[in-house]
Image 1 (cartoon, rainbow, N blue to C red):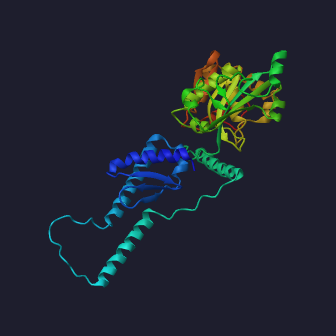
Image 2 (tube, rainbow, N blue to C red):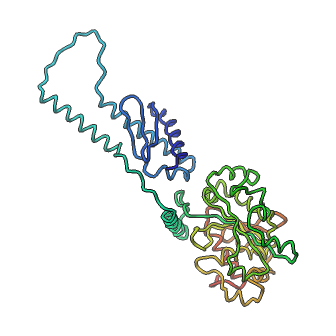
Length: 401
């Protein structure tokens, strides 16, 4: 159980209890929350709320806490109504009423049954502790969640707040290798933030305040610098080297947050400047799958390079093929990146804007005058769709318009 989430739930419910005229202290115990006040304590089931709490936006957290406080207050009043009334201090003489013992017994039995029924409804028996899961079991569960989310978004549904497990966001950056000895030596250095020009933005696997103050406040995120080409792709593009900044955990959740997406895009531009990248792409994917989904940002030094970044990083890694690799190879250049740039040499800014604009994309200028294509967080499949159209314009696409 996430101890921080439990404490936050306690604080939110404690605050909401005052709105229902109930006092006492609350405590989260496993999957239940208990209220200790005057009279007998009561408890209700939280179900999956502790696990879901970090993923909820603030307004939904407030509504959940209010609902829990209302249920606790109702249970507390119901149990309190069954308690025997306090003895009267009136000076009025006591009146003795003789009640047959059988009636008394029936009343007591009735009260006990009512209390048991009430508590079985609002206070389920404590659940046994959840069995510990292995890393493999967690990974399998996250994979299932992520694949279910992919099916939803490709069927036209929006991304739900509980469907972010198993996702990673990635910033792919590509640079010409160059012929100098210094550049050749740099290409052989171990990959880390300092070596790739991002030392001021990443420290010990975390984003720094210098990268972005709000993203740096994410406590459960991790950034890793990994190779941007697998061995096969590296062999296809010998004039280029590439790196990928991989964001997981809380950073991946932040990537899908509409309030933080613009910060991610701005950070991508700064990282591209720091690395001296000529091409770049920012997208998300299921950590266990090779397909690139939910593209947000694609950058090139000119319109042809921006188009190449979109088609290479989104179209070539689409689950349903968007690029005809045979046609790409037939262009005869030294690898797919150069082939795509050459194919788009006649593409100007207005033409590129028209192509991506039909799928919700926008064109802007990034650092060093680069051309940047962006897609909104509410359209996670738009980049993939746009890459198909641009690939066809470059004569390497699959299908027809």
